[in-house]
Image (cartoon, rainbow, N blue to C red):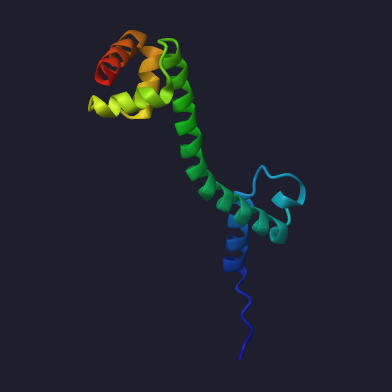
Length: 118
């Protein structure tokens, strides 16, 4: 049987990996074997960090809401509990956006929430 080296296919497969490794430092962008490992690791981090990004943003929204609510003399947890009692179904992303860009509307939401507590 004749020997098959697979020249073009092998070259294209390796070029694809090296293209993904562009911008990596040193041999990680030039040497196929090292670049392949670096790309696999980078892709796994990219996948898991898409989930981590959601965690970070939720924490950021909570901090922004907490800061805005503290100005009105209310704690974050009491505010969220009051929203649930008042059947206000705004998520944290929207609440944080209102706290920054439309403080007057956010203060109205706080007043409605405080009435639900009483």
